[in-house]
Image 1: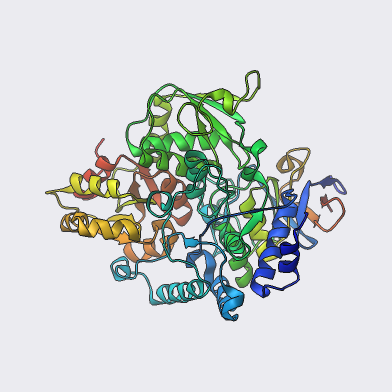
Image 2: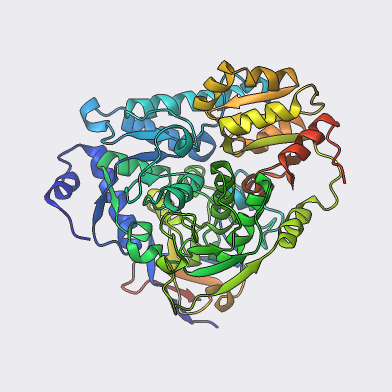
Length: 137
Length: 415
């Protein structure tokens, strides 16, 4: 897997790297997270109990309501935030939230990105490239 | 993106730094989502509760509020989603002074920008429903899906920062549900029954939302046996938006863009198709009720209750007494009428707590649970059931009458 690169349709934010936290599940800051403790808190989320702080989250689709648009900024303010979010499907809220928080995000792949990246793999995420990508290190 | 001379002026800062920030934010979003230009909008609706904003968001709003008056004012009618408290009842919920102080600061900042503090997620029932074809910038997923689907208006989910940006520039990037081609059905749902209670309409929305799965899906429903009332379709849409992140649906023969199914799904078009029956609705509710035989609190919220729902609660609890906390959450607009008509007094005489201008899950729900010892929660809102688990609650979805029975029976759930 090392060196494998997956190109996204869109990206924003700065280049980052970190350990991937991967699941075939959705993402909503309001619905899924205990933002004070920095863990997934929804009991039936596949990452329930896992810390997301500093991790590159590789998930299926943006879910839920509009609160994430503020919450990424709030999480950034306290420094309890993932390193990046990599999604198969994004919704406008996640884009709006990432834009306000200067948060790194990629979305839209030719394959199911949650099946392509192994949980725990070290990855590089570069949304500044002419073709934004995630690469397994 | 292509820009008009007015948009170039906004970018150049000729209308001040707030509008300049706003249009640059909108360009980032528009570029990401493939917008080619902007579309003028007539109204904005901002979700900005302090549980979401936090200290960082409130400080950010206060920075805008300190600008000179002519540089900070919104340019179109701009209203707000529910807040994180009802100041008049905060002590009854055991909310902390710091929560109220943060709310006061956020309200002061938003008012300085010229925002009207309507504090409601049912503006389409109480303030000013948009017209078919009207382009708007609404926050709150329930507001967006109702106004897109039932009113025929055009909005994407606009989170607080983006709704505020639209208010400051009077426009929004033209992508998603502002475009004709995005409003066509992408999946077909055959429903061979009509839900009866509000919780059943919510459960149907939840099941369709799970099938849809993401924002870009537009379900079209056929086979609904009667036209729903506004409150019924409100619960359906709110749950569909919550479970599926869906912003637009059609119901053949009922919603305005789908007078006939062919209007949104041309003959011969092939899309995935699913069936949902009454048994699926029962199974959905049962999936939450398993292993819970009593609850600590009953909550009617999400969306806020209409005047009609307030009257229903008052009628059902008449002559009875709630033995556990029973929270009934409505908008400030409905609360005034409910007070005047005696509905508030009737509900509170029976032990209920009527709350105004807030929403349960936007009001520090985790801290409320800890302060009040609430863990198991009954509600008739499928949307609330979906959200509140993330705050540590174990929710049960039941009808409004069953919820009131549970409240009056010390929390015990009848089987």
